[in-house]
Amino acid sequence: MSCGHCKSAIEKAVTNLDSSATLEFDMEARKVRIESKAARESIQAALKEEGYASEVC
Image (cartoon, rainbow, N blue to C red):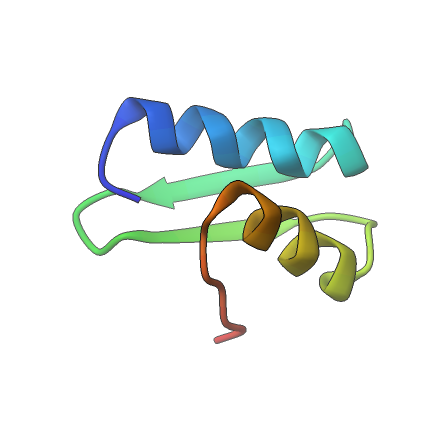
């Protein structure tokens, strides 16, 4: 995640699963914090489908 397009793609992937999800981006660190009612596995699968690797911190 390094640009506005990446941010938009991630937001869309997550909000398609949970429209009330909140996302906080740290573009410099290339991290995003997601609070959602959707299952973690579902979010990770949606991000992977968009081409973004993810890990839980």
